[in-house]
Length: 124
Image (cartoon, rainbow, N blue to C red):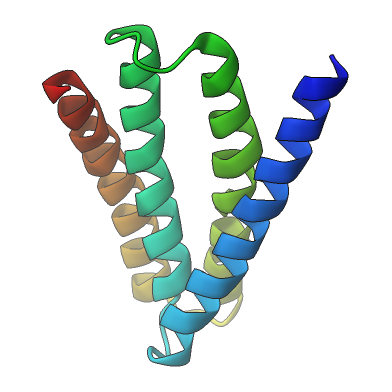
């Protein structure tokens, strides 16, 4: 049990740092729309689909490692609460169209990239 907690903590810290670095880098070069959050959530959906498929269908990754990657790294890397906050800010500022675009892109891209991850996982 302590070994699992250690690995969850380590991968969680790495997911947090990856989120901070990638989100900040993307947002630095894009203003007016939360592209950093979109990129992170889309990548997280892709990685989730890939890891899930490699663990459950291809048995390349064990269930234990899947737990650590999905809960530890991807769980802290994904930014659903940030997505909701940014959308809420857009709604508060009466940027209704921008908020709608953000919701559509996050959900649409998330679903597309989740299934792309599954498809890639099935290729292994």
